[in-house]
Length: 122
Image (cartoon, rainbow, N blue to C red):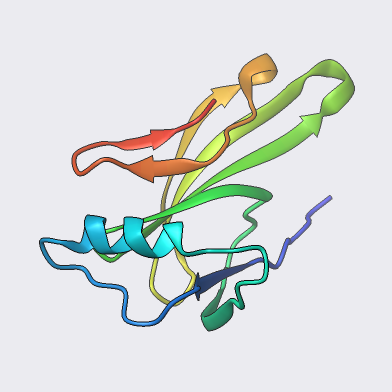
């Protein structure tokens, strides 16, 4: 059975003018600390994914490239599945895919980039 999951990456910012210069980490940290439960979020762009992304878990943008971690559940009762990381093009196409784990350890979580490495919670 073929299935196609239509998913979207939605880029959201609570505050305008996110910086990406030398002080961007400091600027982002200061703005995150200003978030409150009633902060209004505004979607600034949606990117329809053009492939089956299963159940996305996390996203990181590294030097303008988009990475998405995702879980593919094959049989939950048998603990069978796959943990994926997708590299996504600017229009939502699949550029590359890596399978991180299978079977009992198939559920990835969020992800982040530390300036050198892309980290995926497992």
